[in-house]
Structure formats: C-alpha cells, structure tokens
Length: 114
Length: 115
Image 1 (spheres, rainbow over the protein chains, first blue to last red):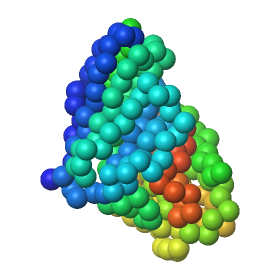
Image 2 (cartoon, helix red, strand yellow; image 1 turned 90 degrees about the vertical axis):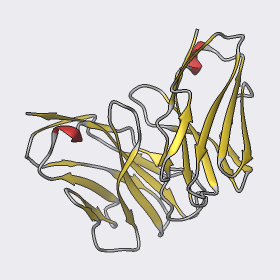
Image 3 (cartoon, rainbow over the protein chains, first blue to last red; image 1 turned 45 degrees about the vertical axis):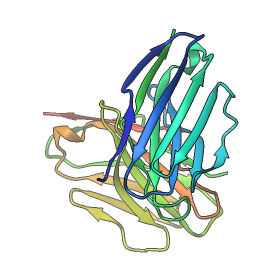
C-alpha cells in the first residue's frame, strides 16, 4: 500500500458546525503533515507530527485542532471556521521528518465554509 | 529563510515538443534537497523528480530531467516529448537539512499542452 487516503473528498459546513478530516497511511511512515492550499497557490504547511507527537504548529488558529491517534492516522478537527478557511486540505506523510525523505500526498479534502 | 522562485506563471507546449520550467532558490545551507511536484486538475500532488544537492549528476526520470546548477542556485525541469497528460501545475520545492520538516514551495507554473 503506497498511498495516503483522505476522507471526505468534499465537505460543506456552516460556521457553527464541528467536523473532522481524516488522513490514513499504511506505509509505516512516522511523519505526517497537514497543508492548506488555496486556489492557484502553493500548499502552506499547517502542522507536522513526528512519531505521533506534534512537532510544528505554523501559528494556525485554534479553530483547527490536529490529532494523531496512532502512527497511521491523522485527524484535523474543525470548529467555528470562517468562510476564508475554505480551501483544499492536503495530508502528506514521509518515512521520518528529516532529511531526504519524499513526502507522499493524499488527494485532499475540498472544504467549503458557508 | 529559504525562498523558491518560479518566474513563469504559465507555459505552453505542443504535444511531442520539449519544454523547460525554471526554478531558482535562495539558501545559505550547503546540503539540501530539491523536488518538482506536479498537481493536475484532480489536485493530487505527485512527485515528479528529486535532486540531492550533494550529487553533481542531474536527476532523470523517463521524460523528465533537471538541470541543477548549485552555484547559480538554479533547478530547472525539462519535459521531453510532452504529452496531454503532462498538463498540470508544477511546483518546485526546497527542503533543507537544517530547516526542519517543511517543504518550501515556489508559486507554481501552470503548464498547458496543446495538440
């Protein structure tokens, strides 16, 4: 299994809703990432987990809450989002956090906040 | 901080022709890694090719090759025998050994392939 899966593919939510994005990989990778990507822009790093511990939080608002329950699974909990949070949310994984390791990306969740 | 510059927002190439996408970067590190990622309309980011800075030999993957000029801090991507399926946004990315986990992406080049 050489892929990163993300669910759901699409999500529409209101500003008062609570929802979660899920990311899963079974490649034995020990680093996992959340990126946010607006249309026609490069991905922006949000969070990095290394060996199930949060390593990097790129000053992301608290309405985004990451969780890494185990080495294969990464969640992003969403609460009280704003319309400007509408974007493609990409998950990625790599064998470990440092060095040469290629990051493998999932297909993304397209989020629309109404 | 490292910066990655892609100076061509859009490029166009005819099928079967060759096109070169440019990328320059700024860094004070001596050891780092460079990548080209492709993102088609489906939005899945796919690694096209990678280059380790300590290797002088340019990386090649089938129809894709790079021209890595370390002194000039340049990392261009050449696509030979272009195919319709090559149409996508192409991102150049930098990852330093001392700069943590993050990939620093350029702004991207949108490649159009015409029949």
